[in-house]
Image 1 (tube, helix red, strand yellow):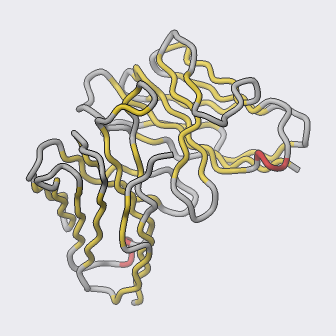
Image 2 (cartoon, rainbow over the protein chains, first blue to last red):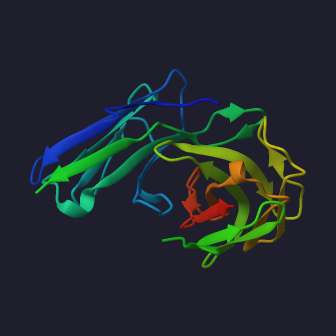
Amino acid sequence: GQQLNQSPQSMFIQEGEDVSMNCTSSSIFNTWLWYKQDPGEGPVLLIALYKAGELTSNGRLTAQFGITRKDSFLNISASIPSDVGIYFCAGHGIFIQGAQKLVFGQGTRLTINP
Amino acid sequence: GAVVSQHPSWVICKSGTSVKIECRSLDFQATTMFWYRQFPKQSLMLMATSNEGSKATYEQGVEKDKFLINHASLTLSTLTVTSAHPEDSSFYICSARGRRLAGGEQYFGPGTRLTVT
């Protein structure tokens, strides 16, 4: 099925460092969502973006909806051990087989060295 | 935020038996529920979409007779894996979208780990 291009696929950083990941698409989306998934759990919604150019923060997390509506990035500042997990971007707003569905990126696996 | 629960969180069953997984929206009415399957180290794969009171729409390649979905109320959807086989072992996650939630937002349940022996 359709999928977004998310990068990087994995990151190994030191505690306290900032993190940046992004998603790109060939299609235009009306909504960009960022989720975090811990091992053995379902994804948890971190940030939702609804307008091109929108910049939204949630604590140490900041995400932006690209002007072209084809990309989005997520930044995490001053990483801490509990930030470890897999981050997924998701786009919504295009019709696939007659219905609007979420299209997911492949995920970014974040590992933090203490 | 919107809360979605899933039950059971894990289940082990014998090959040939059927397993039912429940998905509930606890604090909102879910007009649409989604069922995903996730393999290790992979992204989520949509299996089917169900709207309350109507038949589920299955993704290409997903057997509707094997994965029975019922969305009988605005707070409950069930996925039944019929005649389970070891290759059905996976992590199944539901999600829900509600009328009053902003466009596109979906909230996920905690997932159900199915192991078929």
